[in-house]
Image (tube, rainbow, N blue to C red; front, side, top):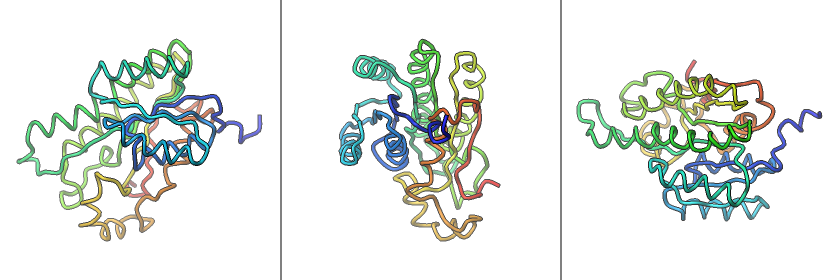
Length: 256
């Protein structure tokens, strides 16, 4: 096998949650460039449809679905419809996420619960539903989007969102535990832990602290529009068939 063939995703089908913009669209582009059919699901379908339109301009096979990852009925319906239309699911990227910036002492309970429901429960429900199909197929790739915020504690002036940080720490352990449980089914489960990238969630922080964050970063910058593509493709492809339960930080060395 030619080494480049390890990264070939022709004939594969991927679901990417939160795929309607930012990091989700970047990873969708990487998989589509490798020949993968990509299913983008967002709570608001118009977000996914806009991203699909751009992907299709470059020849990608892509489709958008509406799905609230915290809603079990919607998750099951998504998986059912994808299987019905495409016949298989080879890759799942759990990218849907939310945050809430607030001091610990003033964090509302409803805000904590919202962040946990999307970031942790949503990751569980999608993995469970898609995983059942992967077990039947006897193979699959699950990629969870964690964060360097789940690997280390940031000072409050950089990131004051304890619900988000805690949820991403949970995703880190969920990744390792699920990898151990499903290795027997030939399903690999890994996580990407991005550092600061431009997104809706980081917009305010980067506006206020962007220069300081860049200065403290060993590479003196934040993540760019291509920086997640390589690792996402590697973890989604045969190139990572003997890699499972790993957390890969993509942060310019900020978590060192």
